[in-house]
Amino acid sequence: MYICICNAVTEREIRHAVELGCTSYKKLHDELGVGTCCGKCKKDAARVVKNHVAELRAVNSSCGDFNLAL
Image 1 (cartoon, helix red, strand yellow):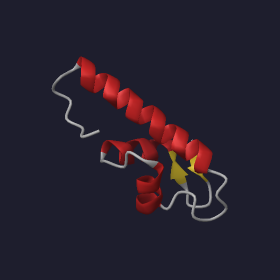
Image 2 (cartoon, one colour):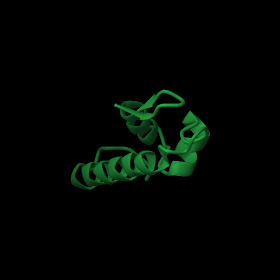
Image 3 (cartoon, helix red, strand yellow):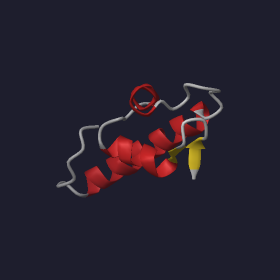
Image 4 (cartoon, rainbow, N blue to C red):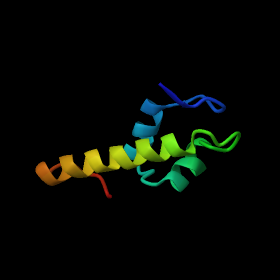
């Protein structure tokens, strides 16, 4: 699903960016340009980042070999 329509950024792309180290909305904004046009996506993009970081932390805590610096 598209999160940032202006820049054609999908939820999948945001989740992948989080896995590569964009663990805050600011980092995501800098890397993918999310929220640089109309700004209507900021809340949803931040939610996707927050939720995926939490998911990865849960995986990391239950599986010691997952290697993400959060």
